[in-house]
Amino acid sequence: MTQNDTENESHVDPVTLEILRNQLEGIAEEMGQVLIRGVYSPNIKERQDCSTALFDADGRMIAQAEHIPVHLGAMPEAVATVRERDPEPGEVWALNDPYDGGTHLPDITLVSPLALDTDTKTEDEIIGYAVSRAHHADVGGSTPGSMPAGAREIYEEGIRLPGVRLVHDGDVVEDVFELFLANVRTPDERRADIRAQLAAHDRATERLGDLFDSYGETVLDAFDAVIDYSRERIESELAEFPDGTYTAQDVLEGDGVTDEDIQIDVTVTVDDSTLDVDFAGTAEQVRGNLNAPLGVAKSAVYFVVRCLTDPEIPPNQGCYGPVTVDAPERSLLNPTSPAAVVGGNVETSQRVTDVVFAALADAVPERVPAQGQGTMNNLIIGSRDGDFAYYETIGGGAGATSEADGLDGVQVGMTNTLNTPVEMLEAEYPLTVERYALRPGTGGSGEYRGGLGLERSLTVGRDASVSLLTERRRSQPRGVAGGENGATGQNLVDGEPVSAKTTVDVEAGTTVTVRTPGGGGHGAPADRDPEARDRDRQDGKIED
Image (tube, rainbow, N blue to C red):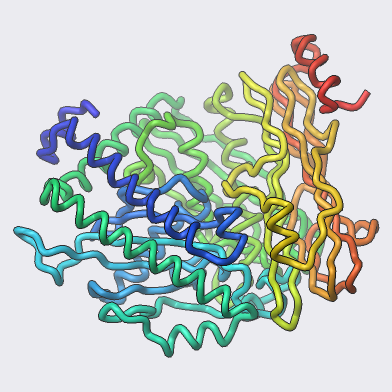
C-alpha cells in the first residue's frame, strides 16, 4: 500500500499497514478453520457452508475469510442489528431473522463484541466484533431441512432468532440455547455446530489480543486505514467504467406456489467513481419463498463489483462505500414480514447476480463473462422424525470469459461451497450415490466453451421428505459475443421429471436425480481453436 493520503490519515506506515492487514485477514481465516474443524454436520465440515469476519466498533467490516459471497455482503446488516441492542463485552448474540439482520433462517449468525484493556480503551469498551455465519441443516419449520419449496410465510421455514443473547458474562444462556434446540429436528448436531461457532469467536478474541500485544493501538489506526485504502482502490476502478445508465432484465422460474415467471429489472448508473443500482420495476413480493431481503440483493451487487474490479483489493467495508443499492418496499428484493424468504437467499441472489452482470456488460463487455448455471441446485432430504437432515447445493457450469473456457461442475455466483464427498455422504446419511458425473454437451459452444453441468443421483434408504429449490430448468444460461447458451437443468424422482421447486414425501428406495445447467459460451463457435475442439471430443466434453 503506497497511498500517501492513507498513510497520513492513519499514521500507519505502509509496511506496518500491509502486515496488519494480512494478520487481520489471517484472524478471520483462522476463525473459519476453527469452525470447520469443530462442527459435526457435513454441510459445514465438508462443504464449508460458513463465513467468518472481523468488524470495527462502528460496525464496518475490516477483514473477511474468503468464504460465501451471499453471507459476507449481508453481514453488516447483522452487526447493525446487534449494535442497536447495546451489546457488552463477554456476550455473544445469535440471530437469523431475515427481517432483523439475517438472510434466511438456516443461516445462523453469531456476533461477539470484542474489548481489550489498552492505553486508551478500557476492558468495557468495544473495539470491534467477531462474526460467524453458518448454514445449519435444520432449524425447524414444516419440512426437514427447513427449506420447504411451497412455503407461503416465514413461520413455515423454522425458528426465528431476532437477535438474542446466547452468551452473557462469558457463560452460555442455557434457557435460550435449549429453547432453540427444542425447535429443531437434529438438536445434537445443532448443539455441536453452535459450539464450534463459539469456539471460532474465542479464537478471534485470543488472536486480536496477541495483535494488540505486538502493535498496541496502531491496530485501531489500521482498521481505518485499510478501509480507506480499499475504498480508494474501488473508486479508482469504477472511475474507469464509462459513465452512463445501463439496464437489464431477467426472470425467475416460479416461486414454488405458481410456475409464472417473476421479473427482475435493474438500472445501473455509473457516475464518475460511484455506482447506483436500482431495482425499480422488479416484481412485487411473491406468495412463495423467493423473496429476498434487501441485504441479500446488496450482497449480490457487491459480489459483481468485486468480480469486475481488481481481485487484489482487500475485501472490507471500503469496497461497498461507493455503491448504493435500492429496491422498492414490498418488492421481491425488499419484502415485508411475514413473507417467506428461504429461497431468496439461494436462488434469487443468483438471478440478481446475472442481471447486474448483464447490465454492466454494456459498460465493460471485456470484463463480463457469459452466464453460469445461475442456480445453487438446492437438494434437501430428511426424515420427519428428526433422524437425519441432508442439505447440499450442487455445482454446474461456469460461463466462459473472453480469455478462457468456463469451469466444469463448480459453484458459481453467490455460493462458494465444496461438494459433499460420496464417502462422507454415504457414511453420514441413509443415502446411496448412484451416479455423480459431468454432463457432456451441456456447456454452450463458442470461441471459449461454457462449463459442463453435473448429474447427481441419490437413492434414499428410508422414508423421507425431499425438497428441491432450483432454477434454469426452462431458461438457458446465456452466451455472449456470439457464444451459444448453456443447457438447462432437470430434476427427476424415480425417473419422472418434477418441477424446479418441489417438496415431496418419498418411500425408501426412491431415487432422486439432479441434472444441473451448463454455462454459456463466449465468442463465435467458428472461432474456436481446432486443437481445443479436438481436446473437447477426446475428453468427452462435447457430443458428436
